[in-house]
Image (tube, rainbow, N blue to C red):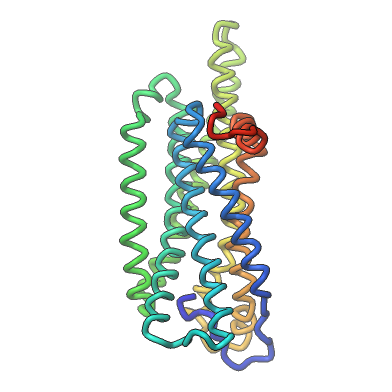
Length: 301
């Protein structure tokens, strides 16, 4: 991927991960995320802005799973001698795969940003939420996200040899996470203040307390998702930083020798996300149950 796997001479041998493990993780995560997308599409109760953004996140995870599985199969075929690793067609195909992987990353973190803003509006502008986050605006936001991701993916792969592009890639990752963490920290801090005020109000305000409770549960779910994203993607971005800062240092080369392990973590992100949705959302669990257990699921409602 993006020519980042080469490791210069060092005392640390490159860690090799079996291709079968990549393929297995890719196929399982593909099935899981496709199930999430299908569940959101089929269940009208899930046709809300937050679940639309979650559906977008699952779609980007699906793209990552498909492309990484295809890349693993290509590498296995090339090792067998059927494909040329440096052929013109193979190079173009590798660029397409890298573009889709970049697109899935940018799309994932953009979806997280959209979800964080949606949760903020849900919690602190509850009475105006449906006027602010209309489905028309949601579709417009999704269109901007997907268009931006497509363009940025092509630019990142086309000019990836440029250190400036790599720096922008890392800055985008760090800045986006900083914004998301700030929003969630701000939400939880103000939510505690609001909870104290609501506790002092008459019982007629109970519905508002329940609304905030459900909203905070949604915010907590997305906090878990963001934490998982950081754990799974941060090693790869540290890898990119090391390439820029100390490309020939033997200690840095030892970390770079773990590149395939970092790729496994990235693929595990797409594997773990759907499990978090199912664990945290009762509506999604019921939809999954109907889709998997109904004898004629196309007619299940």
